[in-house]
Structure formats: C-alpha cells, structure tokens
Image (cartoon, one colour):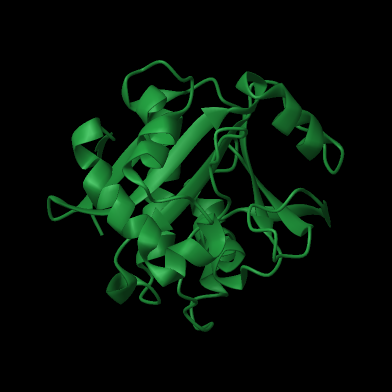
Length: 211
C-alpha cells in the first residue's frame, strides 16, 4: 500500500470528529467530539503552536487515518511515566494512530500504515534513535499491529489509561532506527499467517500527553 502524508489542518476537523465518533475509535481514544473540544485539542498542532505533529494518512489520495507523532522530551510528565517502566532514549519519539474507516480495519491496512508512518518519521527526523509506544494491554489489535510492524515489547506495567474503564496495565513497544528493514521483515514474516486484528488506535491524545 502506497501511503502519502500531509499535516492535519483545521479544515479536516469535521472528518476527524466523524472518525472520533466511530465506535471502534471511541472505545480506545475516549475523546470528546464536540467542535470546540476537537478545536481545543487538535487546533494548536494544526496551527504549529504545539510541538506534536498530527498527520493524515492518505491512500489513493483519500484520507484513511490519523497518526500523531511527538518527541517525548516535549511532554516531560508523560516521558517520566514511561521511564518508570523502561529506559527512554534521549531524543526518542512516540506515535499514536487510528484508522477512521472501520471497513478498512482487519485487512492489514493498519500495519501497513504504521510501517509507512515509521519510514516517514525516520526521513523527517533522522536523528531520532527510537520510537517508544505504550498500548493499553486490552487493545490487542493495536499491539499486534505494532509487532507486525517490527516493534518489540520492552515492558509491561501500569500507566494511566485514556479510557477510565480500562485496567492500567500497558505494554510498551520500541523500535530502534538502527534495526534494518530486512531484519524487521524477517521478524514479522513469522506472523504473516496470524489472525488479522482490526487495528483502531493506540493511546488517546487528551491535551495532557502526546499521542
């Protein structure tokens, strides 16, 4: 799948609100969908006032999903919470993601989007040593997609969940830039016959933490 990427703009907020209202997204992102809430939490990044980057993933020139990426150092409280479970390399970034169209889930689209997002991140931020992503343990679809994208689990432990109905147990995944694509493909080939889990999202962005 050949993804293209562009920055989320305020003109995209109606589409984003629609995605956030979808049951498969709402379950994990737990985000308010009123116009003022979306403008409050996504507006600063769209205007370049927030250090995080919100990107639309496009497939065949049609928006399919959202990826948020940010330097963990820009959110010190969040970085410290992660560091309580696993070492966080200096200059590491994190990702959050969602597939907006439920009909595209469970078909490998999410894994392909994550792989493309990773390649795009390495290109835009070549000095980043690693990507560290926490996922609530109950969201099997999300962490399975990370594994199929070459991430390895480095820790399991309690973190503040985005949805209060969830247990705080999270899995933390990491991908180092030094890992060559050939090694990632070899690592994930063993999973090629595994069940296709319908990826929806990892963590939610509520203004207090990145993606």
